Image (cartoon, rainbow, N blue to C red; front, side):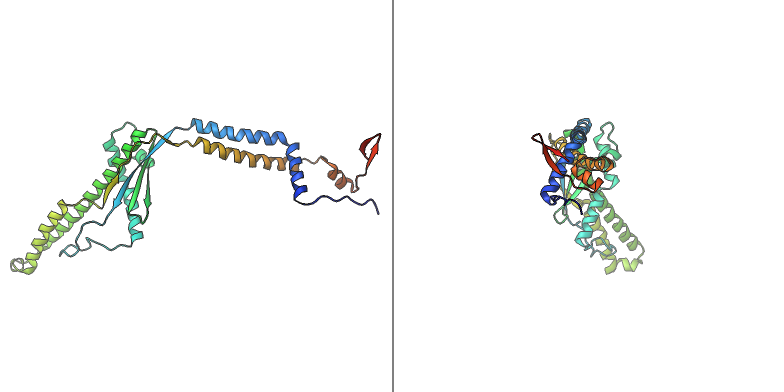
Length: 282
C-alpha cells in the first residue's frame, strides 16, 4: 500500500539533467578548477627558459674496407641492417663525440655533459640518415652545436676506421716479420708486403662511415616552452579535475539536496498540490 512513486526519469536526459544540477550546486569548485589550472600552466610556461632547436643530418655508408687482404681478418662485415642501425645510433651518441664537441665549441658553461643533454639523435627511414638536433637557449648556439657535433662524429669515425686499418697493417707486418727469409721471398711474403702497402694507402684515404649531408641553420622559432599547448592541456585538466571534485564533494555531503533525496530518506512519495495558486509540496 501507499502512493505510487512517480517515474524517476531514467535515461540519458535525466542523467544529463542530474549532472547539470550537480555542477550548479558545486559551481564554485568547478569554476576555481577551470580557471586555476590553466593559470598555473600559463605561469609555468612563462617561467620556463626559451629554447631553440636546430638539426643537422648525417648519412651513413659502408666503410671502404677490404676483407680479402691476407692477415686482415674482419675488416668488412655484412651486418643485419637493423643491427647496424642500432650500432650507428649508439656510435653517434658516444660520450667521446660530446667531449670533442665541447672542446671545439669553447663556450663558457658548455661542458661535455651539457652537450650530451642538449643533443638528440634520431634515425630516419631505414636508418641510413641520422638527424642530430641540438636544443639550447640560443638559435646560433643550437645550429653551431649541431654542426660541430656532426662534424666531430665524422672525424671520430674517420680516425677510428684509420686506426682499425693501421692495427691490421701492424698485424700483417708482424706476420711478415715472422716468416723465414726464404718464405719472404716466396708468394706469401710478396703478398704480405703488397698488403701492408695497400693498408697504408687505405688508412690515409679513410673518410669514415658517415658524411654531413645537411648543415643546421639557426631557427628563431622556439621549441620550448609551448605556451599555447600547455594552456590548452591545463584547461582540459582543470575541466576534468573540477568535475571529479564536484562528484567527490557531493558524495561526501550527506545532506538532502532534492526531492529524490527526500523520497529515498523517508521511503514515501512526494505529493504536489496547489495552495492559493502556488504549487506546494504536501
